[in-house]
Image: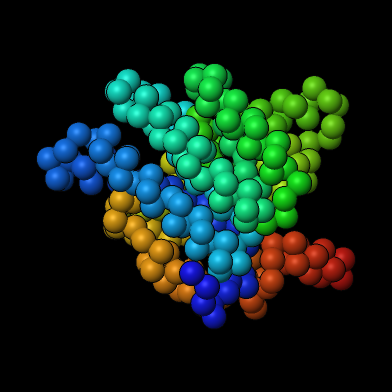
Length: 251
């Protein structure tokens, strides 16, 4: 659904989709029922992000720590990812969305890995919304992996080189991190990329989250003054650093 509101400051949104299991348990259902219900919200949020001019959307679907959950719950999450890929493939292609999965997917079923590889390849040159699913993902693991890669290649370690060595460097830093479900933690999600992100925690559990609340959050954060360490509002972290370098040379 199109409307007059378009984001200007917020280019990359990351969402921790939390509260599925508790939502189900509060209704005397098994935890997996919450994941099934929550999966239906994803498509709406992706579509609204695209409509509102968000350039990149990264969704935390399955962390490295989630392997400790009951086997039935893990299998349900695997199945929901496969169903999403099959259900949304045509819409992703139609809207020129660039799709990518970041994280360790080695333990996913072969059929699901094939679907991921095919969709990533089909969309790699698209210039629309950059949609990333963090699956089997851990922020610390990503940083370690990136630094190891730089060392093996003999590349000098710097903020710029580490940023380029992340799983999906093209998505850039996170401008807004949203967590649903009431907890106020980052939970090992995009640790490098959220250094200067705006944070928004909502008590709404993911299955109850909707595009109206999502747009309200975007509007609210668009109104925040982002300074990136400067005195006045600054367009981006890069802009703030350029000003800092100029000022530093004057001392």
